[in-house]
Figure 1 (cartoon, rainbow, N blue to C red):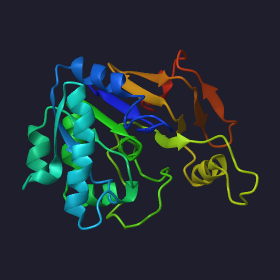
Figure 2: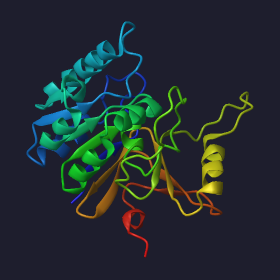
Figure 3: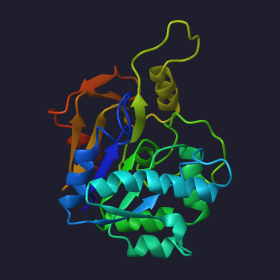
Length: 247
């Protein structure tokens, strides 16, 4: 029943906002005859200097400009007095990127984790980019973001049984003395040994539907598992094992 579009990044260098994934987004919602989408802007905290509400307004406008060009309408959840009711009445959801900690903080504060999860498990289409893809996982623990605020819990929507590391980078600046992205993920796996982590490179996404999951884009993903060598999977390769429930 789940219909998910989990996008690594919104923008590539030199491209327009939501440039590379536009057709994927349009095709995803069009395939489900959806035109009206509830937008969740909670990851956006730096788009306006005067207030968080203004920041959310600016984020909604930025996304609406793109979605309107695709024949899609959005309204941000912060415009509703009852966010949980807005989720209950939504045809579909889109979750923008930004700071994952702030996004999860707001979801827990507004008691939205279970309402969103229930609707998506019942078949409501869900798309998210960057932080919005990260929260489809069981936890936010594989985010790249700074913990600018403390959520009630690190638990997320648990729509997929694996973790995503968006914006995964292979490159490591030799002048930087800190850990590589791979080393950070291996730290996570050392204490979460039964979990897969998908390093989702930029310009790639995961499309999950009809109990099938596909990688789309122009790069392979890299898959991490405790005590195993990282392995690349190209878009044409079968990765359905990622969503098979363990017995």
